[in-house]
Image (tube, rainbow, N blue to C red; front, side, top):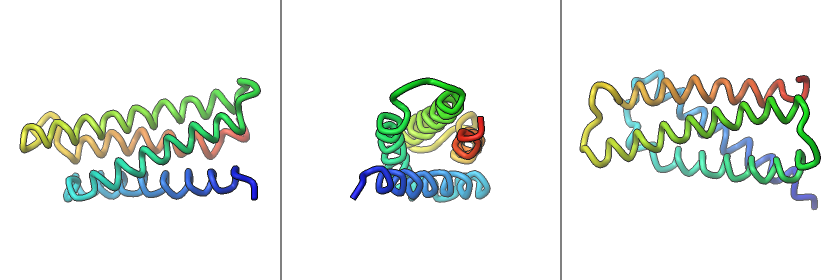
Length: 127
């Protein structure tokens, strides 16, 4: 069995969970963000790891418009992950998020970034 379809499935499933929970938390104002933090960050880590593996297997040969589009999506995903991880760590350390970094705001910013990521993945083949 070829590893590429399995890696694609792992990437899609983890990415859908990460983006889906982010969109739901953004809409809910970050309610229960602490309860979903570990599975959400786990899914993000798996999505990024499988994305790196997919890049190495499917796009290592060159850098055209498809790869440029995917790179923009990867950059926005990494930024969303960093924002969510820093926000979660800051909230854990301080005991409560302040007005400048509420869980809802963090999730809304991450959701916007992940929306760009999803669009980039969807259109990369046609770029």
